[in-house]
Amino acid sequence: MLFALTVIKTFGQLPKIIEKNGRHALLVDGKPFFILGGQAHNSSGWPGMLPNVWANIEAMHANTLEMPIYWEQVEPEPGKFDFSLIDTLLVQSRKNKVHLILLWFATWKNGSNHYIPEWMKREADKYPNITGKDGKPVDSPSPNFPATMDADIKAFTAVMNYLKNADTQHSVIMVQVENESGAWGSVRDYSPTAQKLFEGSVPAELLTPDVLAALNVPAGTTGSWQQVFGDRADEYFQAWSVALFVSKVAAAGKAVYPLPMYANAALRDPLTNPMANTYESGGPTDNVIPIWKVAAPSIDLVAPDIYIDGSEKILKVLGLYFRPDNALFVPEAGLSSDKAKYLYEVIAHGGIGFSPFGIDDNGDVKKDPELARRIAPLAQEYAMITPMMGELAQWSFGGKIRAVTEREDFGNQTIDLGAWEAIVMFGGDGRANAEPVNTKPIGKMMIAQLEENKFILIGTGCHITFRPTGKNTGRAWEYGKVEEGKYENGVFKRLRIQNGDETDWGGPGFGDTPTVLMTTLIVR
Ligand code: DGJ
Image (cartoon, rainbow, N blue to C red; front, top):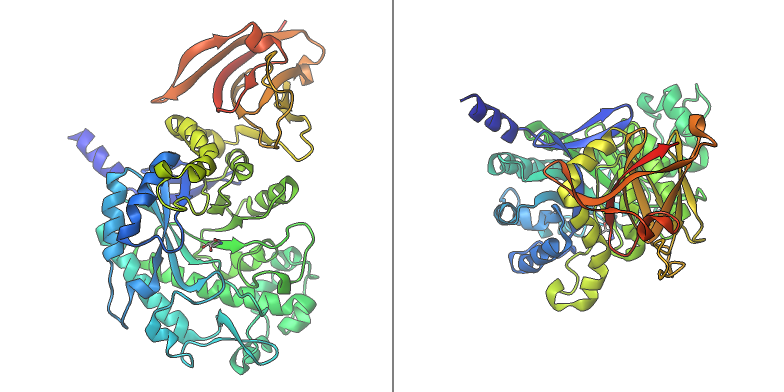
């Protein structure tokens, strides 16, 4: 009886995000869960498209499918709702034993409103677009008109209400509210209605010393948007307006069914502090996260969509979205081998998940060698992580994981492990017949420190050695044991002990397929 009660209680737990010491975990069924995700293409949320989506999710070994649900499909006529796609997704996700993240394509999809129902599109005066600085219409909804927000709130509330009753077993673990909200083509709305708001005073919530400091404005500054924020005023006003809108939609949905909710960002260049006319204005880009945090308390996290290239930029972005008040989650990334390595960085940053975009490209992975080739780098990582996902999520939450990813200079990298320094050399795998260097910078290494001298090493395209440091500096050392194996039901199952040629030629090596090594080090 007691057992049955415990099972029912666990089964009923809502997914939620928790924080400890500035790190986060997504709890699913009450336990830390790492999203090994895949996002379908924009127009794949139709029953006839789903077989390929599931085939590709299976080929990827993903544990979560990110799937859009479309306002135009959910509310084809005012107040008449169609939740058949949600029903289909719920049935199929359970059959495939995969969780869902639903993406609410509504007022904003990549800065435009192309997913609002047709009946709204026909009422442009009631649900207006932005007016540009030159007075011309811009292909982006204005965040400054309550009618649009009220309609969005009504539809989203209906979705969440339906989900609450249809998904008592919590197949859906998070909801993305809108998609890349903001505007391309105008920094803000310059219509008379928006202009009037812009000429008003900056809300008190943005004038606290902390928020002003985060926005590089002297403490105590007050006044209009222009007076307080100068050349950033237009963008900050737009960010405030969009964040407020998105948060109100999320809050209404949470009031009926409080799943974790997030907003995704089309990024700006993270290194050069460009002006907002070069990127999508008003979405949660790195520079306006402080505004979003104040304006959008119902949004649990803001998340970067990673389509930029280059280690320096991508590592910078991960650092900018990994904050004590923001769980790191990459809801979209290019589906390519050069992005796959950042999965390790997200885990090491205490992130809650990673998900490439467009996993159902061109149909069925089994019949499409090109797609199979693109999926492969992540698929093998997901396959390796799956049996130890719970351990990794727990270690990540506890701050026990460090990672390095190969940069464009192919250079060695080090990891400080207290009494040890790990030296990661990319290319080769330590053995005599190995290629000495990688031809592309795709190597990676992740280390979970279980005890002072005991580590789980996971990597590809590199080899590793150690140097005693701190209290061990100058001492002789050797491997206690280098065990290769995998986790099964919480226990490390050894395949073999690596020794001799496998460890003597520059340390344990990691080839193209991710390998898991449990390693102890000894000073003598
Ligand atoms: C980012 C968007 O969020 C996705 O929906 C998709 O449009 C990709 N860009 C590009 O294909």
